[in-house]
Image 1: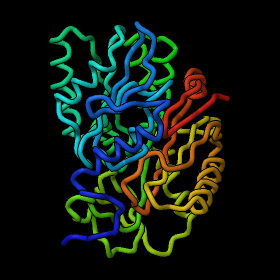
Image 2 (image 1 turned 135 degrees about the horizontal axis):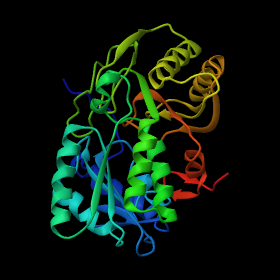
Image 3 (image 1 turned 90 degrees about the vertical axis):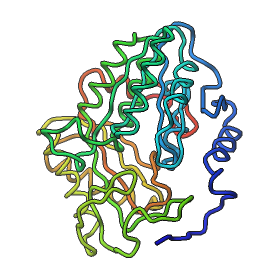
Length: 336
């Protein structure tokens, strides 16, 4: 079955290329288009670590909006929901190399890891020093004793922000990779959605378009979750999801966290704000303090009616990295 939603596109097979052209044209002071990739308009100084991410399209403003000062140097955008190939990632690594090595951040999905491994091997054959960190945070995708099998979700934003700050201030490749792993290991996410969306090229739905129930644990590509029901209220949803995150992260009374509420596509600010209120209340009941906050559309699944909560258990160093300035087309932070 296919679903033909009305979308404002020309030829759907050209959607990604035309999206990149338009987005870069709108933010030419920050980014440029180079060999089909989004790159920083003003490169880092020589000797700094370059940051690269490759990903399937359809999650905007991730990751095209996260290229810029204090963020990524290069985003290699693949087809919708599909990883870019090794040759494209290799081109991205070369574009990001400023002489200090390149850190390749890869969301834990099989195709992304395979293509990144091949690209990294080719880059090293050409004399570029590359390190790869595989990122995962979605607690619904694998049990805790198989944590490395978890897929990437909204919690990756904490990693991107913090490792971007480390690279911008001049940390070494090894130090940047260590920051990425520490932020990853202290981050957790859980998503929820109602219904599904259709792939803009094939018209195929990613799930059951007629199911009105809330599904908790949905993946960024429409992977199924667990039905929570049709009549649950926002506070109940928020408490259920936050308590699962707290328990998985083993947080306790007195801990401090950063809290992110990500709009998967079509949730209104009114709804997000009500959900965020419920999440803060659930954390406070457990004695956990929210000291940094994000709320908005950071990684979408086209126009899905869903959202994700993510938390990062902060230590002594991470807040300083969180607070450093960053300037991308999809995320700007002037510091606290």
